Length: 294
Image (cartoon, rainbow, N blue to C red):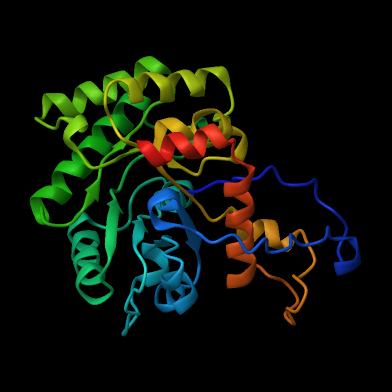
């Protein structure tokens, strides 16, 4: 569900010598109250138990696909959110292969055994053209299924922190999705946070900014699913939280950090932390200050 936060360089030839230099770690301390809204995606569930993330209280985002089927689970030392893996499901299969019952049961296990679970993304239906082509359905169909997912999961286990997702493509689509939630008795302004889907690839456009501004002005606390730095520079002050796993792909395009002995930093905690710090430092001061007082 996440997309790049940094604009990536054009593909380069194979070989470490052709890769760009890795970012240096600025050593900026990460304060929970200020930076909690930037969830760092990871392929490695073991990071949930790593002391360096707990000490700096860096919140993580882990996909259900990375946790499902494990006999033992790590005990979290930092807050985290559960990614449902919806983009992979729909782009690969054209439908959800995980039933609501199985997903709710898995989320309950994660909450009990891992702990410190901030939010669980629902089994939403993205509305990008490529996903619609896979499912053969309309934007309205996907919106109905998205709202139905939230209702189903709440019915199965209302004590879990399910995060509703607002889906659509145009501003009118998103407003219609909010109306669909309202019609089933869900006031999104009363929810801790609501995900904003199908915006990540056009988040720096005027239309995307208008969508964020409009929904935020309605009193809905938004989670930006996969927002790039270009988008965050324009709307970070209007978002309650965001997430990305983009640092991992970013690392494959660069040399390992100084002191790292692995061939690539695509699964390197040091690189991930430095990348996130670089992201936060790249945001305008007014965005960070507004987030602090929001």
